[in-house]
Amino acid sequence: MSSLDDLTAAAPDLRAQLDVFLGHHTDELIGFRRDLHRNPELGWTEHRTTAKIVEALEAAGLSPRVLPKGTGVICDIGPEGGPTVALRADIDALPLPDEKDVEYASAVPGVSHACGHDVHTTVVLGAGLFLAAQAAEGLLPGRVRLLFQPAEENPGGALDILAAGGLVGVDRVFALHCEPKFEVGQLGVRTGPITAACDKVYVKVTGPGGHTARPHLTADLVYALAKIVTELPAALSRRVDPRSSLSLVWGRMNAGSVANAIPDQGLAEGTVRCLDDEAWHRAPELMKALLQSVAGAYEVEASLEYVRGVPPTVNDHASVQMFRDAGETVLGAGNVVAAPQSLGGDDFGYMLENIPGAYGRLGVRTPGTSEYDLHRGDFDVDESSIPVGVRILAATALTALCEVPSGTAETEIQL
Ligand SMILES: [Zn+2]
Ligand SMILES: [Zn+2]
Image 1 (cartoon, rainbow, N blue to C red):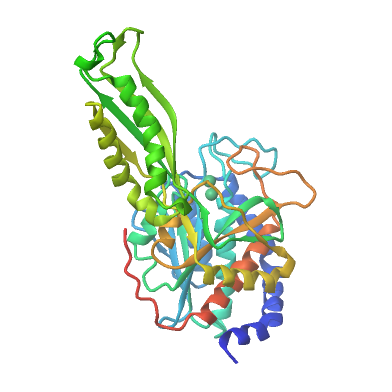
Image 2 (cartoon, rainbow, N blue to C red):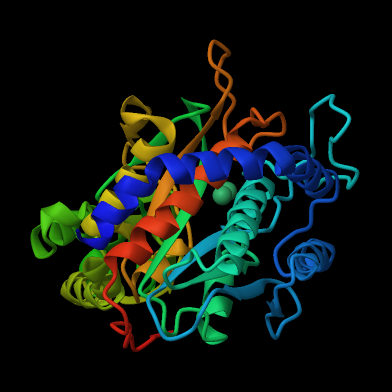
């Protein structure tokens, strides 16, 4: 039998072991989530959250390591030398007031866990505690690394994990994000891009200015700016593979103050969204070159400020299959559903630029209720999604460990 067949044969045992573990620990995990929910912390200030994670891991006999900036935690479970699979949670909250009337509502004015990162932290912790118990009985066929990253919303906390060597020696990494569109008990999966890159661009155009009677003696700046605003998206669409879905959309432009004077400066601001990692990396240089060629034709000076957001999160096919297999084992086949492509961003994309892995959607909506949305002050989850998330991540880690040949991780991590 292959190791995956072993896992399939062991599925009833795994389900029973998860039932026993969650029978003992679900209330405690829900209490842990509520405590984080009541005490949310913004990116790179998650000191209390970090201390709570460390306390829970140490109580289970594990040896967590706090990241150098003081927030975020890495913790290894199980023997070294074999395959290694990582489970990632983000731990930060949002600068949004909590509008819910519940006993665990945020006690911090203007800050709330409106993106569900308290749930992500809790399910990775719960899966870690279950896997630690498996490891203690010699049932873990490799190593699992828990990654609790700070500052996803800022964004960029994922880079702290990379800088601390969090992905060194890791074969695959998995993450779950709350999805209020899906009912609790469902897992959403998708191969390829699942979240998008979103960058901001600021174009500034300058010229000598002058009378509108004599555009030939100066540089017609408004005309040139209009050409830039229309030509750049058009040229990009012909220079970049359309499958990358790279799109430049302007949100603001501004030039001039009176009908008969050519102004000496103008601005255009917009966003670049993209689903393909390679196109995302090329975008700034390409835009700069296109901007210079259009501006040059009209003899205006143009500069580009390109502000990076996060890369797209591109799920690896084999890792998605592991999510699917694990989800079907613990939730039942009909509960693994197709997740749509989102144009939102998640800095988990930085991790998937380095090693294969997948980002899945954890259903958090109570069946029959209307939808909450993420990033709203009234966002909440059905807490029975917590044991569901623990089941999915624990089973996914075991599935992945059984499929990764040992000693294959020789990743060169790029920052
Ligand atoms: Zn968010
Ligand atoms: Zn989020």
